[in-house]
Every structure is written in structure tokens, then in C-alpha cells.
Image (cartoon, rainbow, N blue to C red):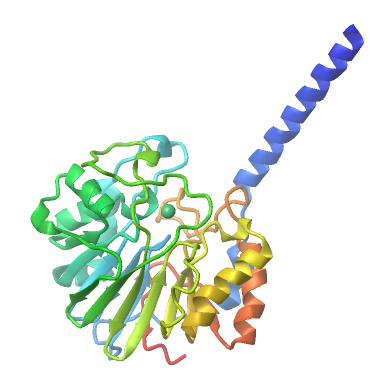
Length: 334
Ligand SMILES: [Zn+2]
């Protein structure tokens, strides 16, 4: 009897040790971006004299700065990127945000920054948006949950515009349509932020609220920003976009058939010429170090790209990975 008991305990210990090392390995290893060098967008850096109608720069996760030289707006604006250790109790890191806003691209854009637009209210999208609005004078445009997050951080109602699904907002020559969408699987904080939420807070207190895709029209050009890797079936059946910023966060944990279905619902319907992949980076690492894909514990960019690359080739859609802070000029004739 004693022997059986001992064997059982040793088996359990062995299982715990194996699990510990497996988890540690999954947490510390990630796909290598250098394996996808051919996908990295190599747009030459834009300058102030650009002739392009507008440009977009990528700042990790789904943070994108749109700027046409007259009007600019920022999607999400998540720069704090708390480390995994810091992520149990989070708040905007004003030093890091200020440093980012002091880079030449932002310095140029801030005088004309009309809006900061969180696509939903999870911390990796919305956490820094209220402070950025406060610091730059831009209006925060978002769901009622994002509005409550902003109120909790002291932004006045004069600087908050609550939007609803289907609404179109005009900022200069940009028209931004808020299309209701679905979050990727593995939503860690469903629900609404139904009262002003002060920071610091637990990440789970920053509940998603509405999840939007943004259809951005500028003259005859259309860009869809689809930040979260979920979809509402047929939502894009009658929508077209020349370029899509496609969120792939968590997608590599899905079955290949589900990844293919995602591509069909979003990209095949929209028929873009170029797809820029976003939300693939490890947002527990700071922007001061080069972007790296999420560790295998949370995602698998290898599997996502192995599935998406043949689909893109078959449909003659260019698949690109944008570089951190390097503006892409639109229309991209390349
Ligand atoms: Zn989210």
C-alpha cells in the first residue's frame, strides 16, 4: 500500500515538473520574425514633403496613426505596454507615453490630432487613450465603456464623444465608420465598463465594451482596420476596402479551418490589394526594444502565416508586416 502511495506521489511530482518546464518553454520562446523577412514592409521613411494623400504608421498591437498632413487621428494609442509582472495592476505609464509622443512623427501630427479612437476597451487598446487625449487636446471617440474609462481618468465630457455601431464620424477629409465586430476567441474581460473607472486597475476591470472594426474613407480610398481576430458572419459582404489592417492576435491558437474561415469572412469579402498584419507582437515587451511575436503560450504566428500565405498568394493579395513607426504611404503603388 505504502509503495503504491509513493509511486503515485512520484508520478504527480514528475508531471508537475514536466508541466513547469513545458510552460516555461512556451512562455519564453516565440516565432522568429526573421523567418518572415520577405513580408516585412520596406516602405521608405516618409518625409514632410510627401505627395501621398495620407500615411499610416504602426506602433504595436493595433495602434495606428493616420495623417494626411491636415488632419491626423490615432487608433488605440497603447504605448505603456506593462511587463507581465506589472500586468496584474495596470495604469498608463506617462513617461513612456510622453517619450513616444515626442518622436518626430508624433510631434508633426499632434497639432492636427483630431481624435484618439480605442477599437474596444481592453487595456492593450484603450488604457492610454484618455491620457493621450488629455495631453494633446484630441477628442476621445469610442464606445460607452471607453467613455467611462476616460471619465475615470479625469477627461471631461467636452473631450469625449461616445459612438455607436454604424455611426460615421468625419475628421477633416477622413470618414470613419464604426462597424460592430466580434472579439477574437479568448476574451479575458467581457462586458461593459458601466461607470467611470479610475486607474490603476486590474486588467480584467477594463472590460471590452463594444468591439469595432473601422472603415476609413479618404477621397476614393478605403482602409479597414480590423483589430481583433473575430468576425460577425457576412458583416463585410457588401463592404470593399483597398487595404486592410488585419488583427491576428490569438489566431495561431485556432484550428487551420478557423483561420481560413476568418480570412474568407474578412479579406475575401473586402477584396483588398494589400493586407497589413497587426496585433501579432508581444505587448508585454516595451516599444524601446524591437517588436517580437507573442510567445507560443499565447499565440502561434508560425501557424497563422503558414495558413494565410497560400491564401494570399492564391488571391493575389499582398501580405505585409508593418515596421514599428515607419509610415506607409497610401495609395501604396508598390
Ligand atoms: Zn481585446
